[in-house]
Length: 316
Image (cartoon, rainbow, N blue to C red):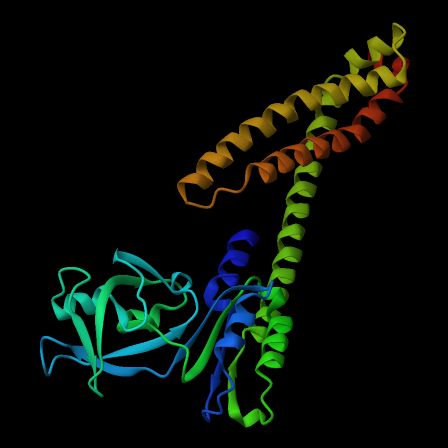
C-alpha cells in the first residue's frame, strides 16, 4: 500500500512545475530553457509559445487546431507513431488531429491564420503529463516563448527546483510570471507517506503481537497436556535448558511451516487482486512471524522447565 500510494503521488502530473510569462516580458528564452533542461533535479522540460490556430492547407475552412512552437527535445513531450521529428518550417500533428484532417500518414501541410504553411512530417501521441498537446500540432521554435513546463525528477525536489528555475528566469517583477508549483503537493505527499507508514507499521506490529499471544496460549496448553512427559524427562536427567529447547523447537517447526504456507498463499491471493507485495517484504514478514513464534514460546517453555518433576509425576 505504501508503494502504491508513493507511486501515484510521484506520477509525472504531481511533479509538474509550470512558469508562464504572463506579460510577454521575454523572460523565458531559449538559453533559460536549455539550462533548466540540464538541471540534475529535472526529468523533462519544454518551453512553448502561445498556441496559434492552424488549418489543413488542402482544405480551406477546416477545423482550427492549436499549434505550439516549442524549444526543447520533442521526444520529452511526445512519442512518434509515424514519420520523423520536424525541422524548421515543419510540424507534427497528433493522431487525433491527423484523423480529423483525414491524413493517412505524415503527409500534407497545415497553414497558420497568417498564411504561413508548415509541412506535416510526423504524427505523435503526447506523453504524460503533456496530454494537452494531443489537441493540436507542434513545431520547433525559439522565439516568443511564453511557458516553461518542467517535470521534476522527484516530488521531494519540488521546492528546490522551483527556486532554481525562478532564479534562472530572474523576473524583476513577480507579477510578470505565473507559477503553478507542485511544492504544496510534495508536502502533502510527505505527510501522507509518514501517516501511512506509521499506520501500516502499527498494523503489522498488532498482527504479530496478536499472533504471539495466540502462539503463547497454544504452547502453554501443549505444555500442560504434556507435563508428565516433560517431567519424566527431567526426572531422567534432562536439564532445564534441554526442556526449553525441546518446547521451543517444536514451536519453531510448526511456525516455520505456517510461515511458508502463509507466504505462498498470501502471494497467490494478493496476485489475484493485483496487489502483490515485493518478495523481500514477503520474506521479511515470514522471518518476523518465525521470530515472534520463538519469543512467544519461551515463557511457557521456561515454566515447563522450572516445574518440580516429582510433583508432576506424583500419582493423584
